[in-house]
Image: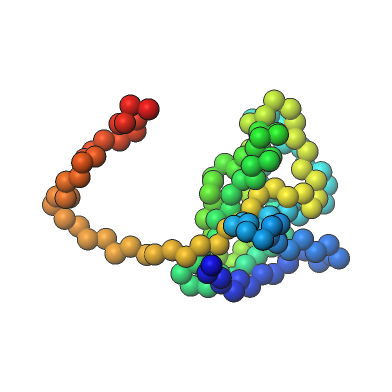
Length: 149
């Protein structure tokens, strides 16, 4: 299993310590928590940016992906609008999570609630090579639904 050192800064000046952590030995993602002063109500169909109070510095060649939590999705219809959200290695601002309520009831986000997860992954930068034609494959230009399912 690969690892990378990620510098993290807590932006809130309080005694609360909500650093992300892995909840199980083999978890791929660390939970991100809401860093809000007051409860936030997310009505059905509504989306809001929820701050985490955290900023990170990733090593070159790594990204962080912000992903939804499956329990919130199943139990309450809470998802992320841009999933996965990508944090580039040169970004130093606060990590924010754009939640949307696809459920039928208002959802209350409380301070310290686990609202998303963050996964760290290496990435490759592409060098684009323009050509007149692409090589043929069995699939060819078959797009959405091309397999009949």
